[in-house]
Image (cartoon, rainbow, N blue to C red; front, top):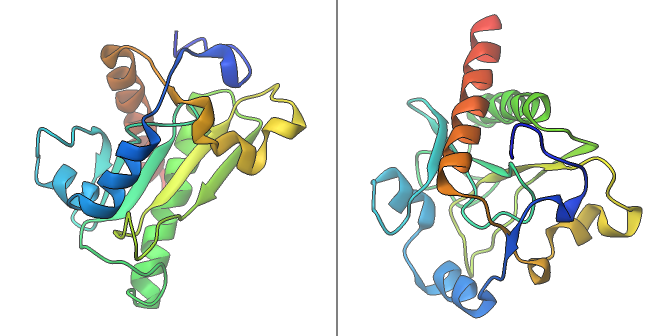
Length: 178
């Protein structure tokens, strides 16, 4: 299904999200990125790519197929203040490579890149690299594409693992080509 993804937001199966549970985890639970890095089985992540400074993995409850998270390994909470300029630029270089890999792997009308989170929840800074599928009506694009009300993409685990592997291979290829 993933390799020949049809167009639009509803072209992939979706499952409802328990928004209250999501909020509780974000605000009260342990840091999901640190737990993913620690290999905690309660925080499974489909690893895309990693190095000594960053981790890249597919989002657990993505609103858009292929939503990939890029985060520093070190627990940092502020998108600019917690980085030196060289460290920030190195991370943004990786965000670019991941964006290109995602765009090359999935049909993409527009690639969205954003850092969301808060001191009240999801504190570990990370960037979402999310491909808007082709053919999405304008009113369902931009911030509307991230609505949790639509639910999360629901594909079999083996398809998600395969997508992570393919995106990771593209990141590695782009990384080597530099």
